[in-house]
Image (cartoon, rainbow, N blue to C red; front, side, top):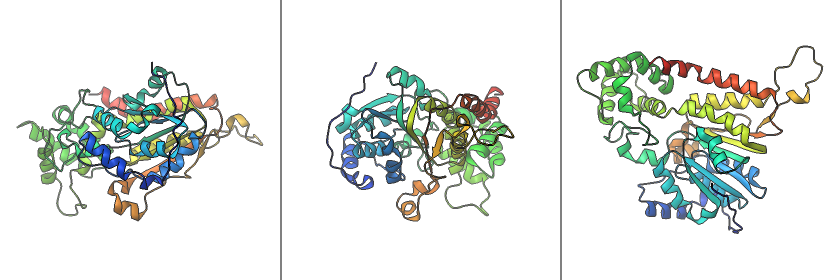
Length: 373
């Protein structure tokens, strides 16, 4: 069982976005990584996370550690907390351990999917945490590791597993799902206008030869999507995104982690989330809404009882987006939606029922679809 340790190290602090250059260069050389992308909305994330980490022995959980860009900034900005970094990609954890070597006594690395949040904290004997951060979507490492099939810019096996120890790959999906199931994935997860046409083309093609490489899929989509009226960029972008979400069960994982986070969040603690996909943001927004407004009030009550008052405060007042300067500097930020809430009082008893109903509604459609396969 891991024991959390805390450092008395005194740091010379610099603005978060400016403090990364030497750390990035050193970590890239030591880990042999091709490149590192700038963390999205870095200073805003530091501003939102660190106020919850002022107390001695505070704990922050980065559920999507990746290449540790955000976590490095958190550790540089505050000396009072211990970081638990979770990632299901073992390669990302290896890189992050190199990058955060100077803070090794303040960091615990966990190889897991973040929907195991409660089990992870139980294993570490950590009953409460003060901040939880999620940067959803692909990490820089996964984008740059071309042999894992996440990108259409280079030919590679159609894999797309964030955790290579799991079984389902993108090639498996293309080989076994029905046309209707493929259409649903491309339409719902990729918002692909030509989802049906692409799905049926895949089914016809695989009868002749299997689709096993990113180049094959990219060319198939290019040949299927009409050229007139195409948006800019590669037409396969949305198909690849949809497959990645399905392979890794990303939306269900996201829905299941929020109730666990709330169960372990200390009063005054914050949940900070960067979402890049409308369906991700919808899940985040709907969960936060459960607690940042009064519960259903019986008619005729002259005042709202304390027990039915909000227990979450909307820190960002909606979603923060990247300005034009950041989008120009960091194209990955173009679709980001950054939201944060703070737990302002203990979670009331009635919230358990609301959360169960929310989780059932949020996951029911995808669960029914999987059972039909």
